[in-house]
Amino acid sequence: MKFIFLFFIMIPTISFASKDGSESNWYDGCPKYTDEKINTLKDKKVETIEELIANYSLQQLEEMQKEIECDKKNLDEQRKVIIQQLKNKER
Image (cartoon, rainbow, N blue to C red; front, side, top):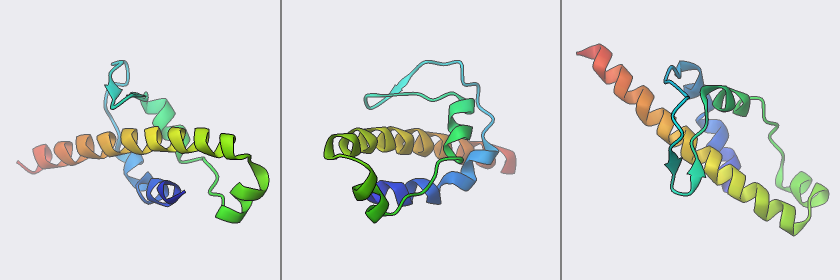
């Protein structure tokens, strides 16, 4: 659940993404997302804990947690790429 909030904190960095998404690498057990997939993450709805509990079973929440962790890993990697690109521009 706490990853939902971290996930949406990092969404503004997505708009700066310009990396080729054709590579099919994996990040710690999660597939590497294409730029299109990363851009769709910003359209995800933020649900409160109360809404999650009311609308989903425990099994669904566990699956969502895995998906959110993959989203977070991909966003972290994209953030690193963006930071590196910005550093290269400053030089």
